[in-house]
Amino acid sequence: MYASREDIGYDFEEDSKEREKKLKPNPDIDGGWAWMVVLSSFLVHILIMGSQMALGVLNVEWLEEFSQSRGLTAWVSSLTMGITLIVGPFIGLFINTCGCRKTAITGGILNALGWILSSYASNVHSLFVTFGVTAGIGSGMVYLPAVVMVGEYFQKRRALAQGLSTTGTGFGAFLMTGLLKYLCIEFGWRNAMVIQGAVCLNLCVCGALMRPIYYEEETAEKTVESNNIKSQSHLKVLSCSAETLTSTIVFSEEEKEAKRGQIKDENLGSLPALEEKSANRFGKNTYALCILKTVSQRTVSIQKGFGVWYSSYFGAASLFTNRMFATFVFWALFAYSTFVIPFIHLPEIVTQYNLAAQNDVFPLTSIIAIVHIFGKVILGIISDLPCISAWNVFMASNVTLAICILILPLMHTYAGLAVACALIGFSSGYFSLMPVVTEDLVGIEHLANAYGIIICANGISALLGPPFAGWIYDLTQKYDFSFYICGSLYMTGILALFIQPYIGKKKPSMEKNVENGNT
Image (tube, rainbow, N blue to C red):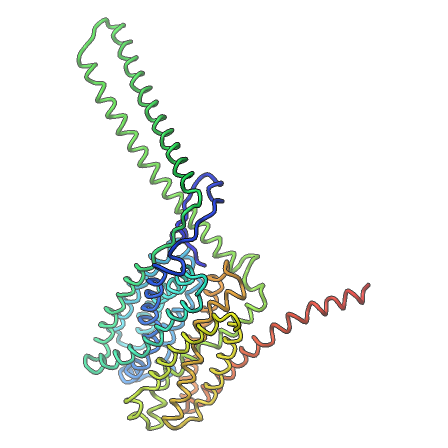
């Protein structure tokens, strides 16, 4: 995981033997405060991912306000979605050095600032900077710690915990869609963004709930005794130094008395003053040493954090040497856009099909959001069963989602679109399985770095998908080809995941045949 020195309670000790001591399992693992972390992650998904899923409401307002093309306007939503995920690998560096809590609180402030500044935008290009970049980076600084901390606190029921926390995306899409619609109607889209920015300040509270994990040593009593012995030895040294200082002072005074042959009361009265001066100097030196020690510890933590981060992405132990993981990244480049495009463009598709009245009663995006909630929980429970493979559940959900995206343009009735949206919502519940599947591919020690790469690839998909769909619409005046092309690319990534394991199995047998032929 992105286990910062703060998050795991790392203590910098000069003695290397103390680092090798075994740690007791924390009582909060799989229980206790772990469920507060799940609640925090749940709220983060509501405020960040849910709000992003509801940007179709604001997209319509921006089209009317700025009168720009659909492709250009769609870049605003795509930027904030894409940057939220793309910055994942770089946010890992902050997590390694500062911890999840500080990173999340900083991101909450930055996200709220992006929403508020966007209310003063005079054109679409201003929204690129204020909403796309500023709010996007802030969202990424909160989203990744929320996912990482759930993985830190859970070991046995990780799939269920991730499923429960990520259901906030569905709840958020349902709640934020209605909230933004109401705010835009009552106050206008500019004031709506100010209010939403104030709501997003609650991300700072969510970050504060991400309490670092501290482990207790098994030899706690021994360490306490050793610390007492060390403290006593330090006290002895200090007392000896004080006695030596006093004796030297007295000795110097006696010398002066012998030489001068007179004893003055003023010299005797100067002894306490000298002792006070020496004590003050000693205190100042101790304070300076504490500052230097703190700076050195922080420097070491930054160097180690950067070293781990760099080696995971670019070093000899790069994750891309794992061919199955590289194929997984290729799949992720096309996956997220197929889930985002319906949320961004469904409101306009419904208007083109003259289904706006029915959609106002129960929006199709709300159907996706509600079923998405149940999909994440149900798929998480199924994957935790001992007789079920999480990978098989993951692949079946992907195939179902790809088929639904391909057949969505063929549905021209509200009932048909509702069924397709329900299947999209349920099958897209595989997002809760992504950390579990990633762990199976690379191992627990590389999970966070690998997951950062995966969500970065998803961010590229979210960044390019909706503008591409808008550009296709500007050319053809239809969204049909957008769904066909994105669905086909998504299916290509799924087929690559199917084929890669068999390629890996065939290669060793081919090498053995070559060796037998040579012998």
